[in-house]
Image (cartoon, rainbow, N blue to C red; front, side, top):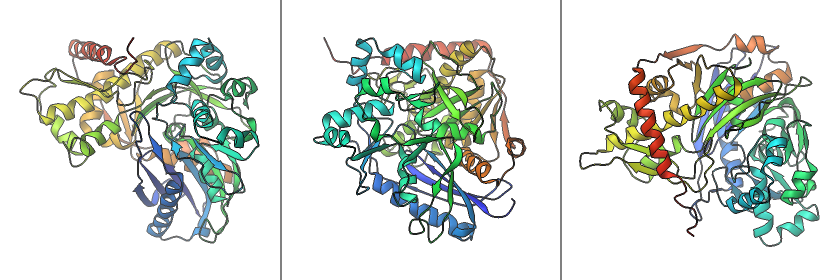
Length: 502
């Protein structure tokens, strides 16, 4: 099947992107729009789910118009979504009962502490591959049911539905007829057993989440439902691909072989390594997660390191500090300096993810002198992204036993030449940027295309990956080691800053 197009929705943390791909994997139309972020309390982050749907719907229309194609020419829809962001809605009315709690939100830290104190961390890790951290969906659901008046009673009566944003978009696209998710998103909830591939009754009991709230789980590349013509401009189109954004990017980077790895430089950064059909258990803070499921094939797994704040720190420079007008300014500013002059920034604006998992760490700027300029701060933010990535790589290589030969990079940060070169220098391996950097959307498109027969198999998809630029490491080893030691010192000083005082 060479005719028609695949539409991919990349529903991210700060905005929605929609691309229309042809059979060659070329984007024929693209549109993007941001939506509002809500910060009701320190460490809390929320989204308006109806706004997400409205913005996404508008962006779909814009992308179709720019591609100059009709909705009925779309043969399949793929969805990649911000993972762990948690939403509850009324099954009868289809209306959210609370703003969505975003993956960055830390309000469930106390619930996680209690679970750890009760000795339950090992149970969750063994079954889900995750750690007890407020990052994940299950503790967010628990917080909503415990703290929002009336929700627990309604949930126990079967009146409420839980979903991550993929579930919400499918709910809206299908006119409310379908409540579903895929294995990759389910594996991020703390409620799904990644070995038995089922919602886990013991975990649900520990989190006090009624099973009636949960969506049906399907392979990432499969038929999820058809669009309601009223929701999709008069056309019935199969929704055929769903994956969490990072798993979608891994698929879009054609990291289909065991040991292949990618890092997506977005609002946060997420480094994933394909570990094949067997999960690798981490003892040092990495996550074992489901990468994807393709039809009836065995699911495949990945090791993942999650860095909460990377691109978000660049946005902080722009929106809160007004140091830059545009993210691209950071490249010019960083390159204007011969070095970092020992100025370091630890971007723990919402705590630290892997390998530290410290929800009480806070952002820390160190080494500031009278001669420190805006350029130093911008450079420190970019360097922090590369250092955090190396933190993940060091553990990933140790635990998987697979040396990293190269890193494939995508996301908005992949266009920053300073960041990519510094990343190669810091890692000591080549960093490869593909010609198409919108790999999250591309991965969602590929999953949908496989399910609809638009693309024959993965070999056809692999052949479409093309290199745009390769950054070779050039920093002397002594300098690389010295910079990294000082980074570790900076991280140690940021730890537990916001923890309750005795």
